[in-house]
Image (cartoon, rainbow over all chains, first blue to last red; front, side):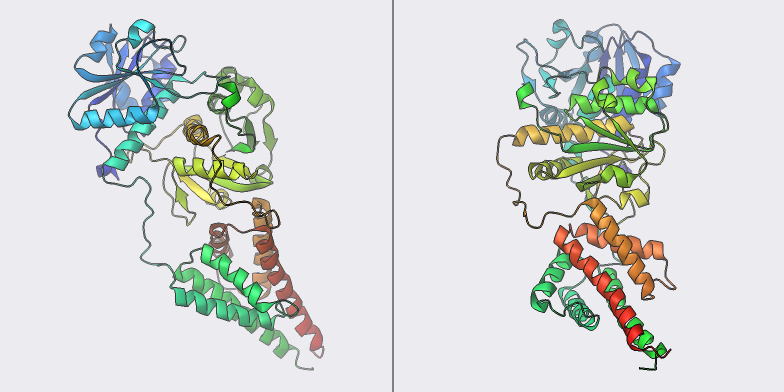
Length: 259
Length: 259
C-alpha cells in the first residue's frame, strides 16, 4: 500500500506555543500514522527534548526535521490555506467548518499545488483570537458539551485521519476494500443448495426433524447460511460434518451388532 | 448542546490487557470528549493507578466507574455487537469495516436497544486472533503503510469521533434500520460462544475433529456463524441439532446393546 499513500508533502502541521514536549512527540506519532510529515513549531516551551522523542514512538524523522520558528507569520509563510482548530466554538467571525470539510478543503488545495497549514494552539488556551484571525477557517471538532478537553495530539490525529480518509477516497484506491481470495472463492448457489439438501437428510437421520415442520425448519437453516455468504471451502466443511455424522451413526450401529 | 449529546449508554469501550495505566487515563479522556462513558478493563496490568488519573485530565468519573473483569467473555456479556479494532489488516476471515461504517453499525444497534462493545487490544500486540474471533467485525483504521503505530487512546478517539459524528447527524431522525423482532432478538455474543463450545463437543463426539486441527477448524466454523448474525432462536436451533446428534448416537448405542 506504500505506493498508494497520499501525497501530503504540501501540508504542514503548525503547533503554536506548545508547553509540553511530550505533546509534540505524540503529535509526531499521530501525524506519521496518517501519513503527514511536516511539523512546524512556533515558540515551543521545550524543544528538542527527550520527552518528545520518548512519546514519538518511532516517528523520530518528523521531530528531526521539525522546523522551529518565532512567529505564526513565519510558520504560515507561503501558505494558501490556513485552517485553525478549536474544540469549542468561538465568538469570532472566522467561518467555521468541520474536520471532514477541512479535509476536503486541504485535499483540493494540495491538488492545486497550494501549500496548506493545519494550525493548533497551545494546550491551555488554544489559539488566541489574534492567531485565529490569520486562518481562513476555524475547524470545530464537536466535543461533548460537558467535556471539551481534547488532547492536542488527539486533535491532530482526528484532522489527520479525516485528511487521510478523504485523500484515500479521492486518490482512486478504496481504503478498506476486501481482497478476493483466489484460493477460496465464494460458494456457488447450487453448491449451497446441495449442502442444504445433505443437511436435511442428515437432520432427518438423527431425528431432528421428527415432530417439527421440515419445510419451515429447513428454510430457517437455509437463511442462516445464505446470510453467512459461505466460501467453497466452508461448504466443504459443513458437508463434511454431515458425512461424518452419518458415518458415526453407522459405525456405532456396526460396533453394537447384537441388535 | 448538553441536551443534544447523543445517548451512548449502551456502548462500552473494552480495553484488553492494557499495559500502561496512562493509556487507560488518556482513553478515558478521549471517551469523555466524544460523550462515551462506559469503560471495561480486561486484566489491566495496573489499575487503579495514579498515572491513569493524571492522564485522564478530569475524566475521572469514567475511571471511577470503570469495570475490571478477568476475561473478554465477561466484558462482552450481554452484547449483541462486538467490534474489534486493528491498525493493520489481518489474515482472518472476520469481516472488515472502516471506522465510519463501525459508527453507523454502533448507532443503529443502540437505537434498537442493543448493547455494543468497541474492543481494543493491548498496546504491544493488539487483539489476538482468538480475541478477534469473538467480534463480528474488525474495524480497520487506514494507517500509513510505513508507520501503523496508532496510540491506543488515539484509536479510541478516532472511533469515538466517528460514533459521535454519526450520532449527531442521525439524532432525531428515525433510524431506517430494520425493526427489532421482539420475539427473536439477535443472539448475544456469549450465547454464540456457548453454542460454538457445544458444537465442538459434538464434532468431537462424531469424530469430525480426529485428524484435523480442532483450533483451526473451530475458528472457521465460528467465523461462519459470526458472519450470519444469528438470532436467539437460530442459536437454539443449531444447539438443538447438536443435542439431537448426541442423543442419536446414544440411542443407536442403546438399541444395539449386544456389544
